[in-house]
Length: 154
View 1 (cartoon, rainbow, N blue to C red):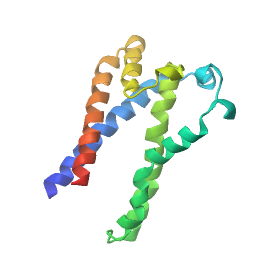
View 2: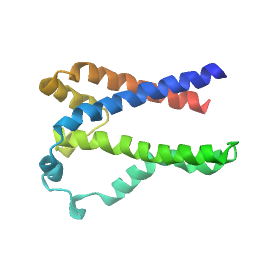
View 3: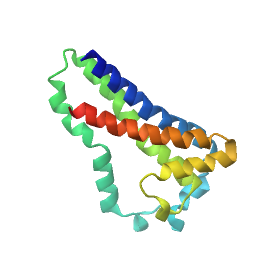
């Protein structure tokens, strides 16, 4: 069972590091004016699909539903509390910050489909030369994430 824990840690890092690199390199390209004009209508309550946004937020944070059932499995309550104090902000940042970078590179909302961050990372190749390896790292990270979710359920 120790090997399974090490595998899950490795898969987690392999999924996490490309997202950090995407944000780190992309933070250099963040353009506030472009973020404000998302979808050529700006970000306002009138042009945001509230139902889809709520659905997306619930889907992204669905793993936190099982927090109560996991609490009974932890021997030291402080460990559990400390893990949540770290985990919740990290998960929120890992879902929002890459999206902010991507919006700054391309503000056309019709382009945003599954896998589009890889396309956005290609834009970094033109500006800084690191987009080539980053697009492959994002693909490998996504695969590791799916494998990690599968391994975690079995």
